[in-house]
Length: 147
Length: 320
Image 1 (cartoon, rainbow over the protein chains, first blue to last red):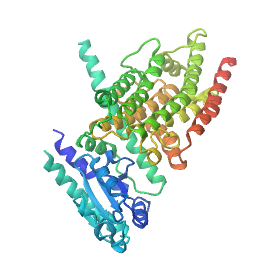
Image 2 (image 1 turned 120 degrees about the vertical axis):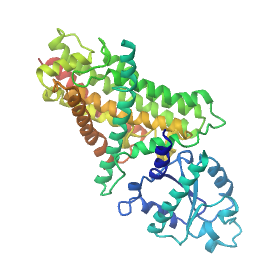
Image 3 (image 1 turned 45 degrees about the vertical axis):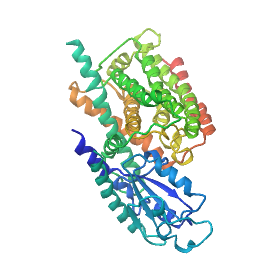
Image 4 (image 1 turned 135 degrees about the horizontal axis):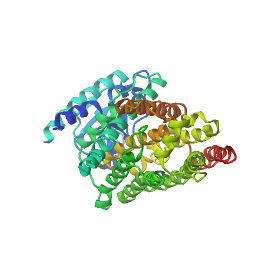
């Protein structure tokens, strides 16, 4: 009975969890600017949550440092299904300028499958919103495949 | 027949379905108003309903360190207590259940959702939840004192007129007093008590200046940190119903009266007045303030709202 409503709700209220795996803070500021009055992602139902247990979409920024690798895997395992992993910026994609450093163990797709990858150093807020809109579609497909 | 009537009261009106729907829409209104005050467009009015159904569709994870049964039943206990409270609150002349001392029943039942939050947080076995429940206890200690004084003040005012000076604890008597002498807010002696109750509503529903227990930036939503899926959905529903019940209680205590006589119009009037109280006491405060520290909350509630409520009590006692 509620199946249609729940599916629609997944499109309308995706909650974000922001995970920094050694980022330079540039992408994190761009994520925060997405929820400011200028771009206002809350009108689409996006909300930043404090706990990975509440999240639907996980935003990963930064090349994976050796300190953050285990924590990344553990945090992603805590997110309940259906979940979508979005990589923000060039660092989780290719480790960017940190490539070859002794403490960088990236890129991200060595450890978890990525659903949406947003390029840029840092990506524009418009690009992030576009990527999140694609993430919502994948989230809905995953919810359909669940049952 | 009586059983059917009570079943209808508990499940549909004014119980579960009605208060859940109105509560969710009121919290959507709160989010929208805060967004407009910050010059944003804001989420649609029915956003909390989407959130609720989305959480129902998520996987429910029980942590290994948690005690499973308490962890899963705690939100349900809170919901049951809130549904019971919603039966006791009169909508102008209409009440589902009316007793001699329903204010005392409401006072006790309204602490159960907070206790359920403490239980659930303690059962989840997370250190963040541990910090959250200790803060929730501080919040309970700080708001109970002024709340009791406000209710005593109104009971004394009504009791002096209708009950030969003895304090009354019956909400229906308070409503019939207001039907005869006009809304309680028109009595200047009770305006400090109304202000105190307006400050108590935000801490009771846990909204921003006083949301020390669920501070999502410092302690990852405190007691709710390990919850996911359906139990989290019920906790969010509890939050919404609590918002409707507290504002509806304010309307019944201070703005009630004869009503129009037609039940549907009365219900709509009650909801509209509750929405106004949500905008005044929850949304405005949320938009213009930042979160207080734990000890600041305790200090604030034991000085200003307590002093306002006591002032009202003294004015009523020496008044006449």
